[in-house]
Length: 481
Image (cartoon, rainbow, N blue to C red):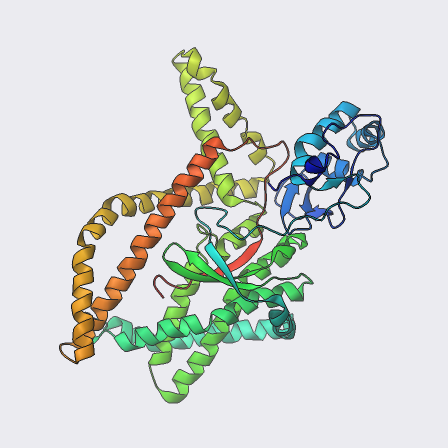
């Protein structure tokens, strides 16, 4: 969480019950959040761009903070809304524990503005690292505004039909080529061109997210680039979409794939008119990239799509909660079965097992989706660990030989000696291995840091689910591309 401005200014350091409670800073927004929870959840948006999901009691308390009501008055009104007794001391405790740390309260006539958002960092070991803004919003907005018409149903439905027809034609033409594909007739040049084409369509993909946000009346931020392990990715910030409905957020999530799929129409037309197979290989590369982009395990488009489709925010955090409660419950039952009092009554295990109540706040369909997502996540994590601890050591041991072979290939290529195809493949292999090693090591380091932070971080606060991020649309761009 951000530092508390109110605490630094002394506004609510020791809040008495007989004086007016602090008020919310200008720019703090409270609104309903469309989520998969069985009870209505609410959105708390800070002026610096951070968003939090809060439960009903905290929402109603925050709406009563106007700088004039005393904690006793707030307690009476809050109790009437909730239908239960609330004391002034309860109000003071909630304010100090849950709202003061956010730095959104003030009692001065001229409160200090919130600091600018911190530099983007990877909020998860499975998130995007080293975001670098490349296109500011002022340049992106006019283009996105002009393109939002592509989401009008009268335009979008025919486009989706054309995308489906283009795919059908492309794969009908590709099928014979794929059936006879072998190392001797591998289209190296076509693959290299396809890689370049996928990179060239990155801005168009991100415009899909920005245009969708504009279509539904939400703002967007800059277009950025970054890295996800060994993969180069691009993204556009659309934090503002949290106030939209889940269906609208889902359209924003898939807007990049929708726009990128339009390029398949152009490629299919070029292939039909010229008889060239090169556009068909580009279609294949595009589809592989889009499928990887829809992988929900990493914070790419697929992750946000699953989150918004199910209404479950912070999927990675929920996976940790589910695994934690399951493990803690098994250990507690084992302790009772074996009559091991120290294990059956362990306070930490009991606290972790109690988090199951937070997961029950979601509907049955959302919980089933979470179970499936967790299963897929665990299987993928096991695969990653297998790669990390089995294949990575072998790759590191052979890496010096690979670098030496790449150096000799580069010298031969510059001198015009040897087989150019073999030399190019060797250089590509070395480049891919380098990115793979760097990406795996980077992800391993961040996984360790995340685990250490999990063990040393502060405990969660009641009805909070934590910051919800807000970067939609980091598209997969292919390892080493």
